[in-house]
Length: 177
Image (cartoon, rainbow, N blue to C red; front, side, top):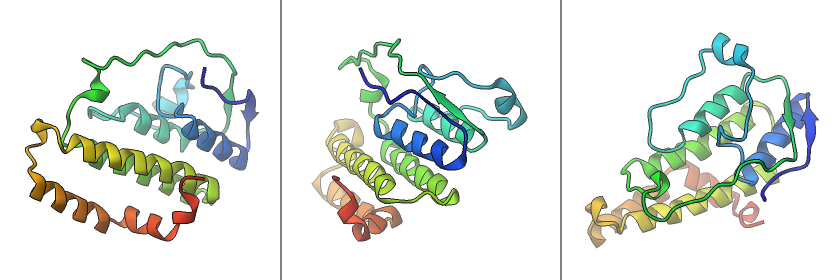
């Protein structure tokens, strides 16, 4: 079971602490574990994106930007089973790295906009960014990627130049905490 401590977060700092803890436990980016106030969705026209990955995550992030409180129950009522074959998360997508990069970048922006950038945020998101980068490197070896060794090497060079990677170069003591 994966969960966090039961709580009601009803101020800006406790909301941010809860969101970061949910992200750390990989619980933030899903709909199956959440109830939403419909008026927030309707009044702010919050919609799912049309993408293979992270559509739930971006929906939740848009919702989090508008919420005034978040309640967490310590109840594991959902059992997730990941299939090796046939799972969307195992499907090849050329957009995987770009969407993963955007996921990390958007959460960092969300935390920064709320004045909540700290060692914990950098550690949680840095470790997630590293995992996504390694996953993208592995996916680049998939025949569907149509990348030979020269193209994979070029991909690595381009990834290294991206602003988020450069930001984490300066914050490397926060990663793997």
